[in-house]
Length: 311
Image (cartoon, rainbow, N blue to C red; front, top):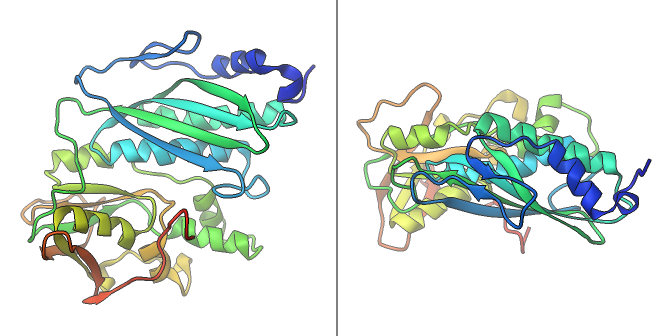
């Protein structure tokens, strides 16, 4: 029996993959044709894409294929949810060396499938190709269900700033792995597999959020995108930030600059009663158009944040 994808071949690999990927109700035509057909009852489709490159976004000695699959799906599904939409489908482009084990690729597919399930999405198709290193190209689609998209440009002076989801856990876990340490386990697991609260996106829209963002590159950096797009200033209260003891002495730094947890940060009118799952961490203030910035306790916080060409 073939043990590598080179021995198995392209089309047999695709058959193995599609057999592991059941289709949800939004997928009207799944793998097997030139393209998939996804229902779009709203008449609009939310679309996003991401790349994960071995050695840059994941290491196979730190994470197994199942975890890598879940992480690849999560970071794309979170972007869809951050628009206030519900995810419907993923498309996967997989580039891999021919000596890659078939079992590794099948477990990757398992991770993608099982991350999609609670978000209500399916892996609807994609492509495979030979390459010198493993690279995943993931496209996620979503449905707005008749509502307006939540963008970064709607924050208004007087709004409150709130977050839902973990902050800093994945960044702390990455540092532990880089230092060769084996715990705390919850931090290592957070790096390997984020747990975005996908329902937070549609919920934020229903609550009247004026802007929302997936915290993928760091809280300060991503709130900075809202500040610039909205022409506002965002003022964070350091004492209000959720910094659990498990994050260690650098906890505040991880919370402000770590992004791979894929929490959600949004702005809401001041009279909105937020559920307990949201934590208010600051407010929106006036700023000159196009000069938005983020301050923590009245001072700029410029350290950290992810930049693919500088980090």
